Image (tube, rainbow, N blue to C red; front, side):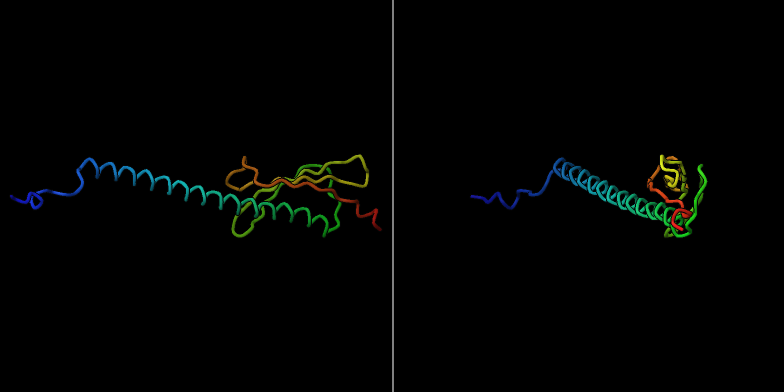
Length: 130
């Protein structure tokens, strides 16, 4: 009556180890992709927030200066938190002669085709308020 247990080998086969490694690789790549998407979303949210501030600054500047911009298109560059943005402003007439409609579009400086903020508002002619 010999004991065969001492001679039995235990452990995983090469095939089982390779399957386990493949599963781990797939799981890690999915986790890495999720982390990258989260980072991209955070960067996009930051850019949209900063661009919204640029657009708001343009509107607030008109109100603070009490200016009456001429009808037309204007462009400029503004920096927020170390990021440069290009703003495009369209001033147009309205049905009321004492009002101007101002539309501000904001783009990252390095990607002028990707609008990250849009804001529009109305200005009252400062002469009416006197």
